[in-house]
Image (tube, rainbow, N blue to C red; front, side):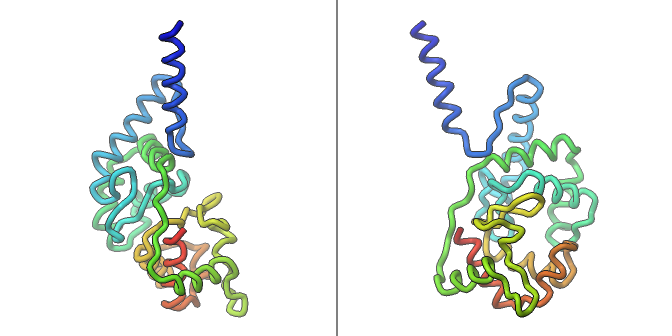
Length: 210
């Protein structure tokens, strides 16, 4: 009985230490798939995206705590070659081409369950400017608040991605790609068509700080 109590206590501790959002598989097939997703992420994806999905280079996005549905959609777009900016072509087309739907789901689930990156900031004034645009938009120019789709805390909602903690440089680059139609994002094209480079940098600094 004593050993049983210790085992139960250890299991409870292990569950408590899991990241928020992590899902625990219950049957052998799910356990195997969960492990396969983790192995693929660690052995393949971590080269660019860092251990547990927190990249050090801003050339590559942080994936930790990103929304599962969004990750699945992007991997499918890479695989189908419908997301075609240069870095997608050079890095992700080949990688995603080797993933079937099941593995895409497993990898996305793994990253969605990882702890998020901590916020970073070096320019409080720029962050404050970005916060105003993120929270309120610029209604005089028809620019809605970013929070409308990405959530008040920038953690994303529905099909819209988490931006909190993302590399500012990466966010700016993606905004530029979308604005110039290099990256297809129909919902975003009209929203950011009039955003200035300075506003892009400010919003990016703000979400990185979250």
